[in-house]
Length: 581
Ligand SMILES: [Zn+2]
Image 1 (tube, rainbow, N blue to C red):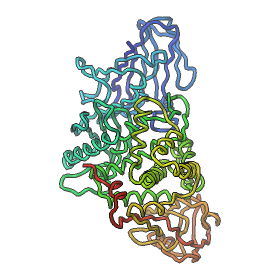
Image 2 (spheres, rainbow, N blue to C red; image 1 turned 60 degrees about the vertical axis):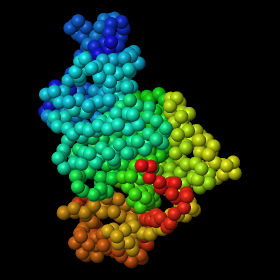
Image 3 (cartoon, rainbow, N blue to C red; image 1 turned 180 degrees about the horizontal axis):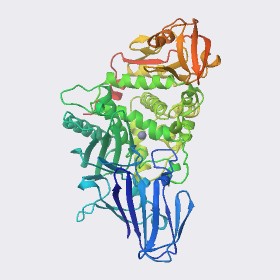
């Protein structure tokens, strides 16, 4: 059997050592390392971290050569072969590999070469860690042999990251007959309310399992590494690797704040993925090709719907109330409306170009793109309300998800846009199908804003729009610029391409020295956001050492800040905003 052995080699140099024992039989062996990891749509060229590669048979060196950056060709001459190499592991992210004297974490696709003629074969994986630190992974373990795991094939192997650290917090709970483990590593504290967080997670998991009518799992593992200013997660079939900031942890005796809710939202999001992307998948991802970009227009469904549901399940599981839920929905819609790029890039295109736009965002991104996470969640919200309204409260987006799960996801069949459209259409009377088609065409391939004001009043929720606010003060002017102000400088972090400032030749990254001869940086935002529409300002700027002046005219602020308010109660609203526990 194919046998991988992985152990820490040098903590300070961040080196992991790997050996792979390959059974005899092949004249040539091809070993490859993926260019990207499923769930994170960017070419990462993991092979650049491989060093000191060798291939032997009976301790005698074999001839080998590389045929491209990710591929090793070994002259095996039908002998049993051992590959040996080191991996530089100093990437803190959930999609990398990391080793130091406090933590050992890796995704197998960063560390373990795929032996291509055996990709589909069962394999044995030995993981040694530092000083017998406890290992956490969703890989099936060999109960007889500590540190020995199995995987059915290469894809299962790379879908089970491993976390191990000197110190950890651990808890367990049952939800829907499934054993769930929760592990925190990194910046730990006795103040964390592990019982409170475990209970909240249990409620979230139970509610999501209820939506899909059961769980496809035997067990699930939440792994979270804590470090200041970190946030994110990468979904897997039976586990998740997350990062969060310590201030996002629930603390004993403290009320839930926005950051703590955000962390529960992250867990809710990644858990929803165990159905929506890890099992119910776009046709385009079946099978995954890890050696090239794999484009799909469908991420509005797999990330957008998941982003809508992660919030809905905070409400359904009782983490937030309906007021907070509506506030967070309105904030997400406002976030989309404040991005000028939504007028250029349709949602389906945002998904298709994830590799080069969302995953390679720069200062111009708000001008030329919209996120399939936030706008996808807005589309999901609209579609949910649309189905609820036009089915007279008989159906909802839940029925769409359940139908797609039972007819596609559970059977391993991929989906496309037509399948989602059909799943929605079957819930609505025939005379609404044309309207539904307009929602799909405009929502996914057009760039106009979804008309929420036509739908929400049916749910006893009012929609108001106003200009942006800073600390509850409504802006009275718009300069088209957003500044990053530090102790020593004020820099233009974003510039609206359609603003007067851009036309005047001001650029992103310019340093703003003074406005109307006043160089007090603390006054700058007041001048730009709380001036009079039409008012002219004289700006003193610097670009790479050249100082220059520009005059700009302030514009009227756009009414892009949306507020949803519950105005009363009715059946449609009650059902949409119901708590499930
Ligand atoms: Zn996601």
